[in-house]
Image (cartoon, rainbow, N blue to C red; front, side, top):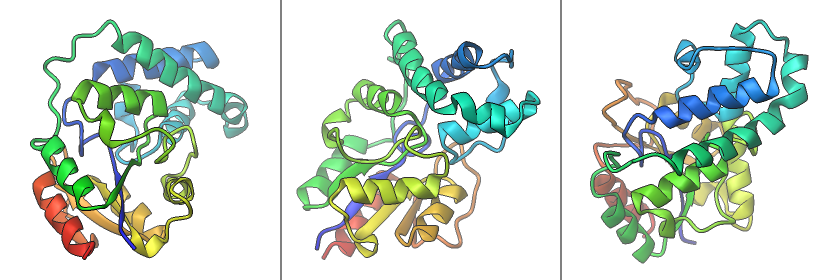
Amino acid sequence: MTLLALFDVDGTLLLSDDPVAGEAFVGALHDCYPVDPPLDAVAGTDHPGQTAQRIARLVLRNERLADAEIDEHLVAWCSRFGKRYVELLDETDTSRWHGAPGAAEALSRIEQGGIQLALITGNPEPMARARMERLGLAAFFPKGRGAFGCDAEERVELLGIARERAGNWPARRTVEIGDTLRDVESAHAAGVRSIAVRSPRSRDEFPDADAVCDDLAAVADRLLAWNR
């Protein structure tokens, strides 16, 4: 059976900072909760590799909201975050965004090798898909596949959701590709393999990853080798 390759977005496919995300994140918090966090509120949390819902909880805890208060509006907040992001992105010039070098070529090789592609990201789905459109990668990730930050709060749960949406794909034939230690940990907790990609924003070492790659060309090589 062929592989299912689940690609992270931030730091894996998209390498640029994205101020629109912070503006949309905080704006949606204003809409849903009685708080006024700064635009850089996410920076004060342990956010790498976390889902949008989890990051929101961490920010709201810093704003002294109890978990019960957070739970009341968290799903609605996540939906609002995704919509607000797309609205703001429509008015934003992203011509200076940097995607991962050689991403389209690597994804094309993987796809042509018969491997199934999907996204796995803490972003809300509208946000992730809008980013893929701007990077010219949307065609590799059809709707109805993958798992996103509004689907579950814990990243490990996204692995199961993505496999289910792929037709209950076996864990042993599933690989997560990401750039953080949390990506590796969640993959193994879900019983799937992990490829860690070194990125400019990450200084992590990945001793527990099943493979560590310097770029997406090397990721393609590894996936195609595992798919034999």
